[in-house]
Image (cartoon, rainbow, N blue to C red; front, side, top):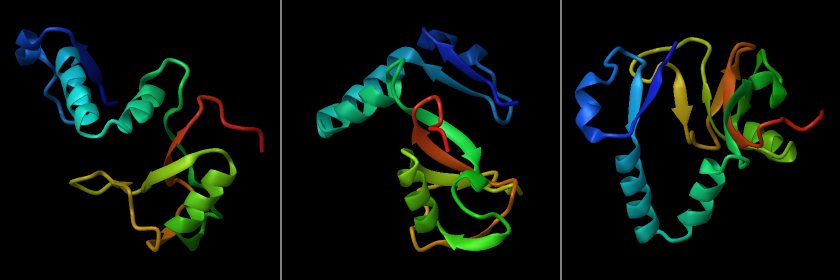
Length: 134
């Protein structure tokens, strides 16, 4: 089980978890990075506002079967179109068979990328907390 820890003081970085799959965020550093991004690309303000707002859209892993027929090949464009039709934005996928170094996670694959969709694959989407009724 991955662990994400928020550190409010950068001096505590040495006690942060260092196990594989564990990650930490230093709040002040995160804010600094966000401000740098926004200063260079002001249009990102709305994107970060949406992703970080308590009631905004968030990242989710949803079963591939919600967006494509599993047990067959299809392009990522087909997945993205299906997700868009359901009010979500597909930005990647996680394969049922994790492989190093990315453990099967693929973000921003080419739309022309065609692969076999396994029933245990997941799609990475940006969407509201509750999925729309099918």
